[in-house]
Length: 108
Image 1: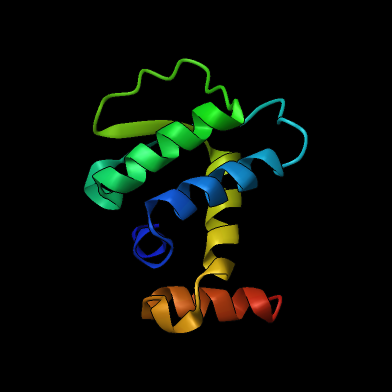
Image 2: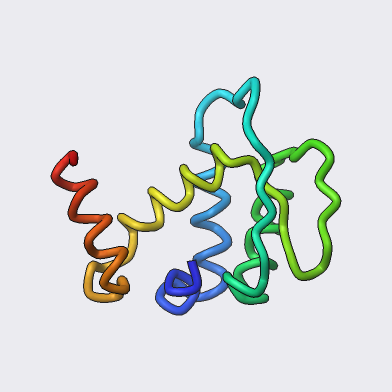
């Protein structure tokens, strides 16, 4: 998502994440909670995720967020990753993600 932040900018990334969370579909009955760390995503992305979740009304049970991380449900993180992977131009993706996107585009 760090690449999305650079490509979209902080305001557009925030709005994109809010829109994707709002269009997720019915809230899942069960989903594993994940902690996403600033170490992997960067402080700007963590901040965007926290504020987007709050604006979209996403509630994460037992989410003891620390300033350097954000808790989210696994189903949301998978949904966001998939949507953001297709939002970025292929040339902006690292090699591994280009391969993943090609596999997804081909239905593999």
